[in-house]
Length: 273
Ligand code: ADP
Ligand code: IPE
Image (cartoon, rainbow, N blue to C red; front, side):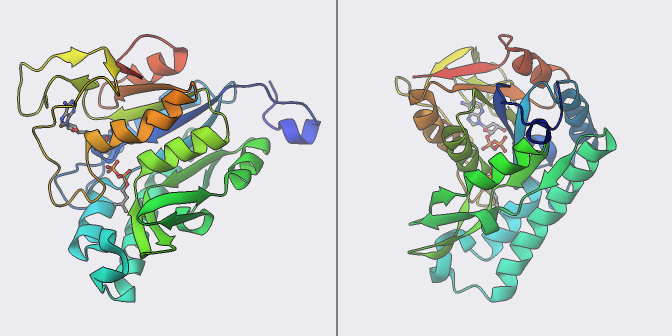
């Protein structure tokens, strides 16, 4: 398999997988600017084993970088937040710092990671992602690159700007680029019948019916999570499921779970409609 199909003029039938690295897995979400370095390098090792046989796009969340800064200025409320322009710069800077750490870890294992500034390639309307320049991602893929973008501040046609979750960006890219699957890497094994951090006896649901079940989310995301918690994740994947894209949630804190999902093994929670 050639890394650079474009240069060789070859058609590309390799499956495309979108990997969403949740802020809960790559950072300590209850803290401030706290990275989980070992987790990030473990995940990078796992991704390397599947590259270039799979085409992949990495989307990461904000965790303890983006969320506290966005919450401080209520940036999710757009221009109504009356935030100073420095706040917009602060949140993007926080996300770019986190992005830099992910890029460094991927490059350390010789993966051709390529950072993509989300705000420069997307647009929102009424707080929702409206358009993402998927052609740009296609072009990066055709050069054998591993694009890495993130949930971010996105300029918004009605609100001025808003905060778009990496979950929504993952789904939009998966739909436009006809990905075969989206793997959400979180800090729990999958979806449980109640929040496993609140109820130690909570049971893992191996196949979760996104439309048929109502999620019990006891631990309502703290004020610091400006994009909503796992319930928003489930809602956002419905269009992908309808398009036949496979969706799985795995635990990034457990070595090997991402690899199993990439192999198509039955790990974590499979989300279906
Ligand atoms: P991420 O940061 O990985 O994108 P979120 O923080 O949005 O993900 O969601 C993951 C968190 O959701 C977990 O840390 C878990 O504590 C919480 N959670 C709440 N209810 C549930 C549930 N029923 N099943 C699984 N996790 C849940
Ligand atoms: C949030 O992205 C981005 C910002 C707060 C700027 P996500 O909603 O994807 O982040 P996580 O995965 O929940 O941390």
